[in-house]
Image (cartoon, rainbow, N blue to C red; front, side):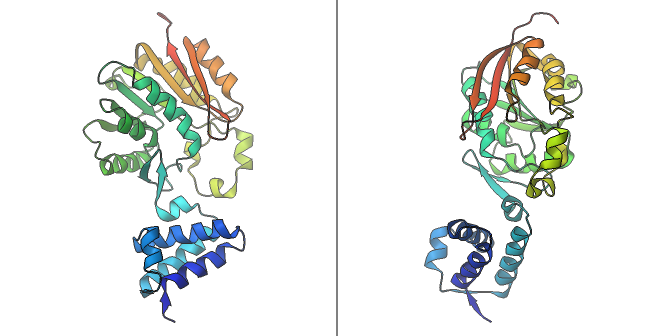
Length: 291
């Protein structure tokens, strides 16, 4: 049967309404159809009576089935918006979340007061979302995006290129659980959203996370703090004197993360909350002269 774009939208909304309220179901259907057709929301409304080709119909049906099976919308779309930026995402990287805006805000705020052309390391970069956001707001910042995953680095490189930041943003492979390679040099700031899910929490994750998002980017050790211990201890070797360390952390981990930082010579400057008023990020300055 020949279908119009409006028919595809209504079919998608009906399918999603079996488990979502009508508003959410409509948003899901519209987002998928906009992505598949390459049309904006306004264009989709204006062109609703246009007939959809067989390929569009097939792609829409497949996309709806993927979302209904539990796959996150971001992976179905292949992109997600973060901090005003549209980023490519694949199953090799975490989906950027609004929670991460808290640590991004802290990093940008401090970076704006650093000396000219500050060097900033985004460790455990994933899609590159934090580093790219910082570089987009701090126009003279030179950002290095680092991750142990080669697949994640490939995604980050694609996003760096898409946002025309290759002149100031680069990618390297680095292990946050080891010592920083000497070739990295010294940075004015290190910002990181490391894996912080505990062993117990890994067993309780929502299926949409557990079955689709990379466990390498989620599991932070038995108590979720392995990466904080390593980065706070080892990566101060990659900080300039008086350099800054900025972390995102999980719900309820703030005191432990701050304690780890203080034990390694950092002075806590600010702790901040996300849009849901949950404490989510901290920034500290490395003041210890000798270890």
